[in-house]
Every structure is written in structure tokens, then in C-alpha cells.
Length: 373
Image 1 (spheres, rainbow, N blue to C red):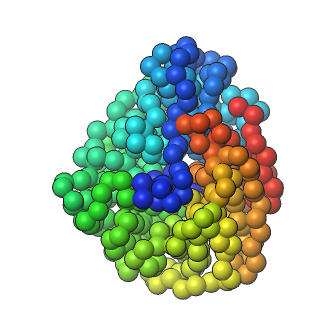
Image 2: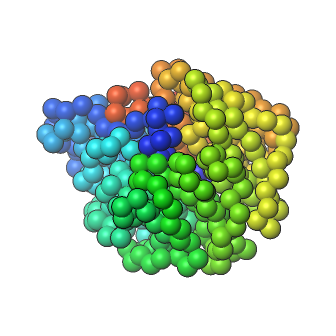
């Protein structure tokens, strides 16, 4: 699965120690659109790539208003960067993670950036931005395919929270609800997590997990016909989905967080909505923060423990596991995604305190190297 901007609930943030946000205050405004200078003090918070060579990084840097978002763009795999027009975002006042997704057609490049409370869209590759106006108190997961961009919206009314899924074509900002995906639970905005797994045509697996409340999940034979299924993880477990192909649709179930450890189980479905355990138990080292599929037999788990960014991977469908990244003094792994079987990226760390780093692999996840921003 292409890993798609997971929104971790505050209850999970407390368990995971996540507090992604922005940098310190007191410097000049970010450079203008097309500038080749990365803002001083820039800390990456999210990343999205449409190919091994072309990608974007959303981050925060000191500015006159405290901390302001900038978006960097590379056309050569991170060897050099240009700065897009600022999207007008600031770090979440609640310490929520930030999101960035990109999609590209022959003529149009569309970006969506969010700090969870505010969301903006650009349909000219970052040359201009405008607000996304949806009935949502908070934005959860974001997903992008060549066919469009998908957004999980959470709306609160008292102790009742409603989750819906929205779609806009990749060429414009014209949002409409995705039929069949809607749930009402008794929980709070601070304790809900949503997750979207896509194939090239759109969403195939969607999940919602709320602290202390039953989880929900939706699946379908194609992106236009999603129906609710039994949530494959236990009531108190978080669920991270990954779509590899029709015969390999994965879910990672994580529960019982402790001091730098969390129980994890990998399950697989042949497309019938029933998920069964597969392989051996993944390492419990690290509190789960992300999940990605690279192919039918290769999956990656992002985690954090002891202020380290951790990636566990299996290259044989869960029979054996390797820890391929242990980045000390960073933080939780987010935006873990593979552009092809060899190339992948992730962000590890806390943008709010300047420990975040963008890592890249060119050998399918066996080794990871930091990108120089």
C-alpha cells in the first residue's frame, strides 16, 4: 500500500509520545514560490512523492507569526529543492500530525496540505493555495491516486462523532461524499484515527478506530462500491490497512502499548473482507505509528521507542522480520511510503522540536539514508 498520512488520535499520541508540530518563533517569512533556498530552521513534518524522482515535503520554519509552513519540491530524488508558495498553515495548536498528499496528471499537479484543523489545496503544483471547505471539525487520513484525492472527515456533536469519506478529482477542488462510508461513535476528536488504503482507482480499504469504542472498517471489490465489514482488529486495537493486490490485502493490528513496546499482528485477506493471521509475530519493539505495503510479500511497520524512529520489515510475507531503520534522537515514523519496489521515503521525528528527518531507501527498504534538505 502507498502509505497515506495517518492521523494518530490524541489517546494514541499519549501512548506513542507523538507531538508533531512546527519550529520556533522569530525569523523572516519563507522564501517565495520557486526559490531554491530552503527556509532557515526548516523542520519536515510530512512528505508525498509521485515518483522516485519527484516529491514534496511540508514542514515548518520560524517566521514573523511564530512558525509557518513551507512546501519544498524536488525533481531529482532530493538532490536539490525549490520552495513553493507558502500554504498559509501553522502547526496544530493541539500538537496533531500534519498531512501532505500529491497527485499528478499529464497537465495538473494537485497538492493537499493539512494541520488537521485547517486544510488547503493547490491545483497548480503549489503556485497558489485555497481553503478546503468541508463539514469537518478535523481532518483524518488523506489519500491520493491519479483519479483523485480522498479525505476522512471527523465531525463532533457533543460526545457523538461522525466520520465520513470525501473525494475530489485530481484536477480541481470539488468535493463530494463517497457513498457507503459513514459511522457514528461515542468518542472525541482527540481519540479517533482514520486510515485509507488505495489502489490506482481509489479507496479499497477504509478504517476508523476510536479509543474505547468499537472500530469500523469498509472494503469493496472496487473503489466505487465500499461496504462496511467486520473490523478485523480487536475493539481496543488500532488498525492500519495496506492494499498490495486483490489476493493480498493486509491489516496491521496493534494493541497494549507499553514502555517503548506494542503488540503487533499482521493479517491478510484474499479480498472477501475476512482477515486471517499470517506469518510470525512482528517485533513488539516500538509503538506503532505507520504501515506500508511494498508488494504481495513485502510490508513495513513504522514505530517509535526511546525517541528513535524504527522500521520493521518482512520480505517473505511475514515469515521473518528485520529492523531496517533505527534512527536515534528522532521520533515516530510517519508517511512511510514506497514509490516502486526499490524506492521509498518516510519522515521520522518531531517537527515541533526540530528532530525530524526525511529518510529515503533505494534498495527496497533494506537500508535508509537521510535526505539533505
